[in-house]
Image (cartoon, rainbow, N blue to C red; front, side):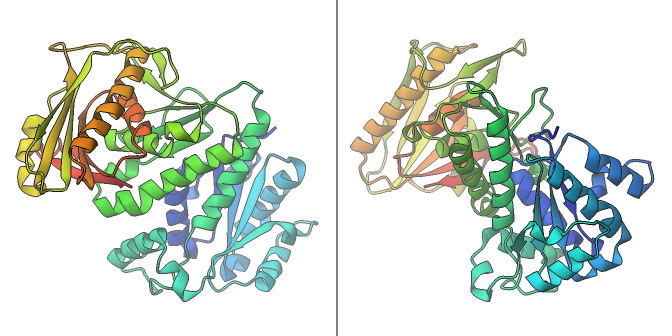
Length: 430
């Protein structure tokens, strides 16, 4: 029986390696784990291991990139396509998406598929063409990002207007995956998900969605364009499909992720959407508790203080001082920040609060929302909120859920690696 929460196999000719790599990045950004030969092949002979891996029940589905030179690949024609088709025919939960590389039309794809060593007609698979009109991919965030990477590598043989967007392929995989998971789960079971930016996901439970952004942080903090053109759109797409394909289920997230990422996740799952959501917050002993908004509130003693500075300015600084005081680092970053109309600080009444319970976190989120609204009423000209946080990840998630009606929010991430300990721009939410 197929595990619908398993990896997705990418079949491709190595002439399409750049396309396969970018597809893998796009899938992982959306929470879909990937099997690809460059990092999943062991010491066994190539064809033998691929055959065994394709028969593994922990493989959830496959994406087959069909290019003209697939006809020159015995491994694809004799092993990959026949085994994918065999799994697809024998198990309703195993899905295959056939991707037509640029320049390959449906007629040619059927001819190529007919050469696979299978007694069955493989042309009945769902096919997604990457041949696009010139005007469409120029506005594709993924297309622009891929082109930029290929330009740097000196491997871009197409203009930016010719590079195909991968959105439709990702949508097809995400939709089918979540449908299968939803149908497999018992009626009251939650959908388990993760978001990781510090390390690759390594959770000890089965995850429907495992968003892996860690490669983007291997070489330091990514710039704002990657946040806003690649990561945020992926987050919005994934949360939309979770709501659409797993209706009525609780969504549980966990992971080791930086605060702007977790806040953005909460922002994409606002309280107003009516979806039951939680962040599984670990304590000092490694035990998890469900931090969510629909708990009976406990008194958090979270307080705020607004200092009005310049009413002619349109930017408001919001400082959240819970696990640490962010003011020194904000001060070091001052030269890169706009003039503020005010500074709104949040902190606990007590000098320190080592442990925050789930009911207290829910209360703190309500206080954050109300005090932010009060600040907006006192400074009605505010168009952008600049958010600096030192807080548990679960609280950042809840704060994000409570700010969907706010003006544009510019989040920041603390640079702890360069030695400067200054803030860099991260996701911008609007």
